[in-house]
Image (cartoon, rainbow, N blue to C red):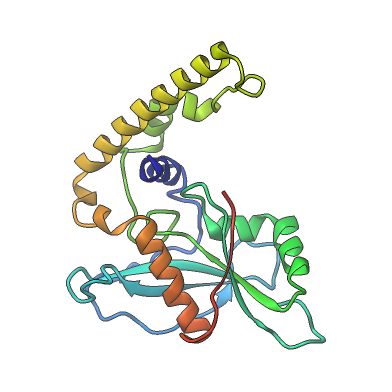
Length: 235
């Protein structure tokens, strides 16, 4: 169910990030090394930096499936009096939320997290595979209208209703009926996504395991393989 929730969330984020995939991107070309940090298009905070980071599509066989291209964002360490301690990786949860959009648009959260860690860490987030302008992307609808029509007046769009503390039998019954309906809708979504030809050779490379390995690859590039990975996640 977690993966289906991820798919449901990422469908609404297909155009969330303005950092477009280069038109000459070749999935099967050798991956570039490093991140070309630039100002984030449309961001109000001029300190934010955005870029792309390429990783193997399949970590088990790095040449078989080509490469993925992750959109990455950085909020530099704010403490000007003390040296930087490292990088803090941020994931806003969802599953399937855009880390780039979250860090770029939620000024209060990024500043609060920076202050809570003494301002001595670069805060880095990214759009997971399938989300925003990160490649690979996952398509399950032909257009936005079709997607909106599919979710119109459904529980996932409106949210589950839970009365009181679920201590009464009637409340529990109502809750589980809603949960079963959500499961059914998400199962239908998963089946729909599997039917899209554009997903045939990419869907297998999207999910929690790949996201974690991408974060480790980012950490090893920005810091060092033998240093502690710092992570701040929401759920």
